[in-house]
Length: 121
Image 1 (cartoon, rainbow, N blue to C red):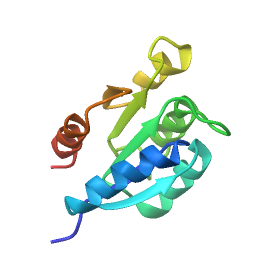
Image 2 (image 1 turned 120 degrees about the vertical axis):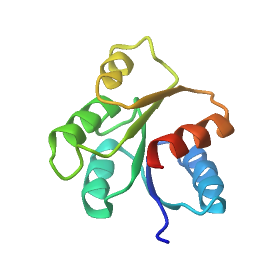
Image 3 (image 1 turned 90 degrees about the vertical axis):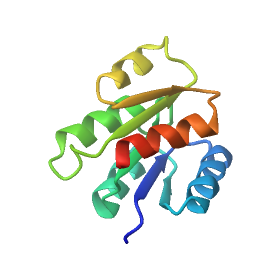
Image 4 (image 1 turned 45 degrees about the horizontal axis):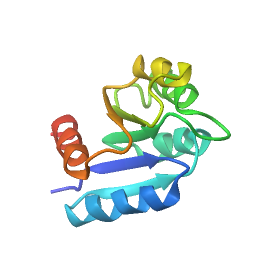
C-alpha cells in the first residue's frame, strides 16, 4: 500500500519538523516547504494527498498560495488545512475561502492528526 503524502508549508521550520516526525511515525510520506512560493512549486511536483498551509509567511503568504493551488488544475482538488495564529487578520479570513479545514495555533497535535486522517481517507 502506498503511503499518503502530506506537504507542510510553513516558515516556522521547528514546528514543521515536529509535525513531520509525528506524521512519519504514523506512516505518512512528508515534505516541507518554507514559504508559499516553494509550497506551490512542491505541490505541483510532489502531488500530495493533503497540504498543511500556514496563513502568515514571507515571500508568498497562505492566501496567495491557496489561491494559486485552487486555481491550478494539477492541485485544485488537494485538500488544504489552514493553520494560523491570527484568524482575525484579513489574510486569515481570506485563506478560509480556499481551505478545507482550519486549525488555530497553538493547536493540539492529536486534533491535527485527526483532521488529516479525515481528509485523506
